[in-house]
Amino acid sequence: EPEVTQTPSHQVTQMGQEVILRCVPISNHLYFYWYRQILGQKVEFLVSFYNNEISEKSEIFDDQFSVERPDGSNFTLKIRSTKLEDSAMYFCASGRGGSTDTQYFGPGTRLTVL
Amino acid sequence: GESVGLHLPTLSVQEGDNSIINCAYSNSASDYFIWYKQESGKGPQFIIDIRSNMDKRQGQRVTVLLNKTVKHLSLQIAATQPGDSAVYFCAENTLSGYSTLTFGKGTMLLVSP
Image (tube, rainbow over all chains, first blue to last red; front, side, top):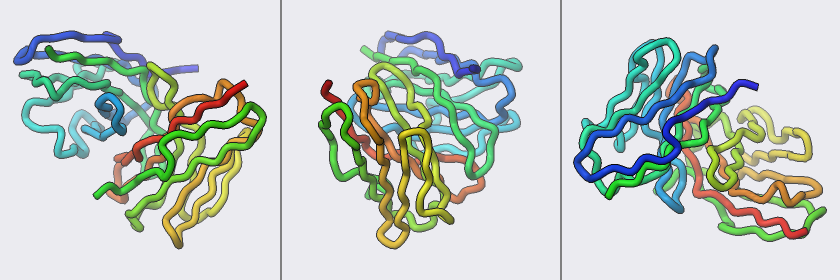
């Protein structure tokens, strides 16, 4: 059964450093998403991506964040200058799209900013 | 305020019991609802969904009930097993044309053997 994969599983970085979180969505999916989950809190939407551009983004997704699909398989989330409060689990998801799209989530990357 | 929330943060049941996890939502424009299961260290896993033109949908051992009048959603798990122990999230879909999910806080289900 195809699944969404994410690397690395855990990323530790110093405050102010740039990080890139990587995702490989399910191959025939066209819509891609990033969510984050701060420890003990609910999952929060960050951004959705379709046809090589951002479809929607939340207030969390400020200028420090960017997404990219550099090739036909990877989908990345970049945080330019990490802050302590960026520490969280970051989940990538993919789906076929539409208002009743089932989104399939990856296992997540735990980002720890020191 | 939050659009989607849960009544009970933790639910403890015995193996074999039926479990009911509840969720309240406030956005009357939402037309699609999903239940996700999240095991420790893993991403949310799709369980079952329901559209707003339905009030009940059944899956394998799970049933989702939707009451649009009171904006309430529930997940029923029959014959709960230890493997069902996880955090359960309800999520709603906004009418934006895209699939932006708004998640509730989550309920921890603990199943004792």
